[in-house]
Image (cartoon, rainbow, N blue to C red; front, side):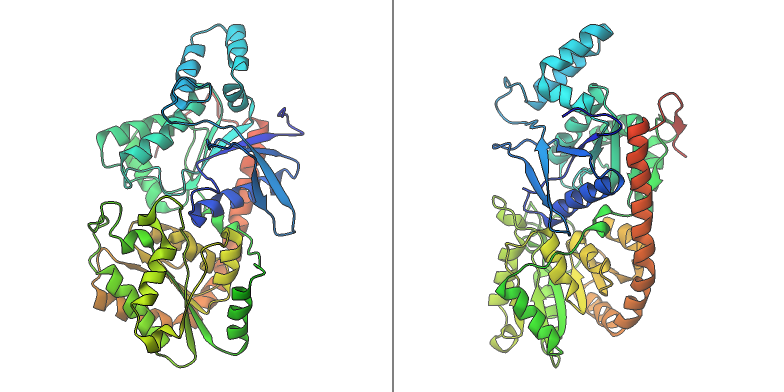
Length: 450
């Protein structure tokens, strides 16, 4: 696929449909939507290494499906392979010392390097919140190596709206500074990340000035899944039941990857979700929907659906009959549709709460990290975040009750703020796509981070 101004090719990095995390899938689908709104005939590829490199299929709201080709860069034990990340990095660094003509021929010898360098831009989103060492240095390093590869081949690296930091270790800060100084465009989805970048970079020169832009997942389209469970939920709503959606995080339920309260919660998360369910289920005509949003195949510690089932089984029998566990097979667009049927929503997975916010559903963000406050702030809903790292269970339950009583005012606020927010994303990322085709514009002048 040849990239030019009439038929541009973009590469997306840091998002996939195969993680089992519907938030990450939502970021990919929303990024594709934003690119195609600016350039309906653009080619889009994924810098994503999987065992079977078949094209990725992204559903659109109009019933069409977009196929994304893969630039199958991998990082496993087969270092000798042509598409191994470390081998590609070494080859790209070697090419930098070659004369221009030789460099071009060298890049063409490797289809993976050539695909990256010939793209209009590489759009990186790092899973939304993984440009940080909060989940461990391994994830930080693996994500950063792909960004470094893009920079090494001389391609344009655009950092899409995401969370930056915290960078707790010295190595993480060094890596982040190197990448941020050289990115062609930097978008932050919250003001605290803008402050983190400014503090990290100080007066160091940067190729681009960071800009604030809401999370692209606000752009995701809900698509109705034609299932018996969908019809059941719709029927409950039509009969006048109040639907309370609760996303239960398997990661928090299991104590994090360390399984020892990794995120330093001040409450017992298992007890908290059980009491939330009982509070709502015991109210007249209320039905609680347990909504899994991360259902990975190979990481049971992350699995929301397993946690939902375990919570449901532990409930008293009279409560269990008013609780419905959503199935684990819905995609990002379908789960958004089901979340949109709720009258009130609570969630510890941030993109589950974004699915609610973007459909004007009053929502409580159950925060285990700083990212919630910043993203909710962009929607004018920062008061709807309850921080589980700071509040004990009784305090959390009291605040949730207050927010539920105030749900109509929350709905009115979202009805005003979300359309403006969506327009902001569409406008900013649309201009960014156009600038990418025109060269992005910041090649010689650099900005201090202020």
